[in-house]
Amino acid sequence: MQTCETKVELRDVLKKHHAANQMIVLVPTMGALHAGHQSLLEQARQMAGKDGVVVSSLFVNPIQFNNAGDLQTYPRTPEQDLEICQRAGVDYVFTPTPEEMYTGVRSISVEETYLSTTLCGASRPGHFAGVCTVLAKLFNIVQPTDAIFGKKDYQQLAIIRRLVRDLDIPVRIHGAEIVRHENGLAYSSRNARLTATQKEEATVLRQALLQAKNEFRAGVPVAEVKANASAMINKVAGTEIDYLEIVNAETMQPIEENADPALLATAVYFGDVRLIDNIEL
Ligand code: AMP
Image (tube, rainbow, N blue to C red):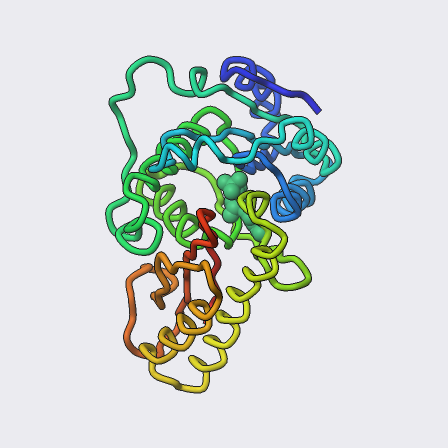
């Protein structure tokens, strides 16, 4: 495994793989790697096979944080991250500094204007423009044949599919299933900021999502499904729902009827830690 800190270095080492028409599978991350990321990396390794290469990026992208405190407290575990990458069979790890990634005054931003108007896009202004901008850059730097993203960030995955479609970026986008702890809590880098009690309490998210799925499938009206799920979460002291919405799983726009494909997505504060989760209904 080789670590590259600069764009020039990474482009340089990838040249031979492009020349040989090899499969290049990219897994972008913000580090603080856990079992969810590990699963993406392993899927990338499998996809690339022995003839292809796997590239992962570890970069806490400052421009996708709409909250300075969140950026500052975002967990960082660089040494452990490299070990996880190595174990998963990653070939190249890209670890740029923010200064390396964004040279000089930035005056171009890539903005999605439809799918990103709801859910996290509504509650975190500028977040998805930051995501799309850094991914457009990573796609240009790496020029991967394939890239893998988790369904944990379902709206992000939908927006990325739109990004590459609308900008004709020649990369295949793959969605990976959410990896959860045995108790149902989805792995997240932000879980590291929860107390042991909060980690236990946060399992209410999965319970609320599963209940909602059952109700939705049984024909309970959408408004009632949402109200019941919210009530279950609100029962846990110290939680604050940022949003809990049922949307069309492709357009990310709220729906009022029990129609497929539907997604329930939620963001909930446990103390000052904001967790997201979702379920395909
Ligand atoms: P992040 O480092 O949070 O930006 O995440 C990097 C990638 O890992 C994104 O595509 C996420 O959707 C994905 N990811 C994060 N947590 C999980 C999880 N629990 N299961 C599956 N994928 C995940």
